[in-house]
Amino acid sequence: MCLLTYLIPLIEGVTVCSTTAFHSLFLFVSLSLQDQHGARSQRSQEADKPHRRKGEKTYSCDECGKDFTQSGSLKLHQLIHSGVKAYSCDECGKDFTQFGSLKRHQLIHSGVKAYSCDECGKSFTQSGHLKRHQLVHSGVKPYSCDECGKDFTESGHLKKHQRIHSGFKPYSCDECGKSFTQAENLKIHQIIHSGFKPYSCDECGKNFTRGGDLKKHQLIHSGVKPYSCDLCGKSFTESGGLKRHQRIHSGVKPYSCDLCGKSFTYAQSLKIHQLIHSGVKPYSCDLCGKSFT
Image (cartoon, one colour):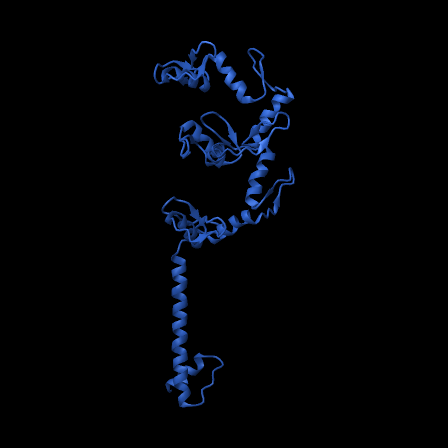
């Protein structure tokens, strides 16, 4: 029996009618066998790989240890550590590592705030910001400060708060050197040096750099003093005023003079005292000319 006669029954539905077809048939059989072997090899390799369940985070960042479900997500994340920020905002020049981050940022300049809170009506440019805001209304504060016990709705707010206890103030004013724990507080402070006071009291005409300061001031005219001292009953318009007053009863004097060591309950009292050491006497008597600090 010739080889052609032998091979024909191996392939169902194939008819060979010439010697030339024999060569084609032989090539077809060879390739089929190779494909079968390759498929078995690939299945063997897949079986050797560890089984990954759906949602499992198998891709880990060597720099910070953060895990990801997809290699592409890991690559995008690694741009943060590289410091490369290839996407720049044409409006303000701020740079971003990802195109999506730039797109979300540009919504700020557009003024579009598509996400609104059903509870209070406040609007946001991003859905994530709305979700974080809604925690305020829920009353849930899962993040607690180990130092003082104060609770927060977001971990970021807790981290900012913890700088108060650490004493770390990375944001400094170029004008006067005063330092702050948060960048937002520095920006608010810098308005003082600009002299810009856009908030004015309708009652007395006094101007303020911040709307919050105006509201606090207006309590003076209203006569409302909601903060009372438990020890002596004295009332105050602001909680800060009550806290400062309570130092009198506690005996705590946190402000000390570097030159003589004398301590004071208020920062303003220390400043007035320091004039004695400076020799400056800005206040003079019109009748006799005697000067006072």
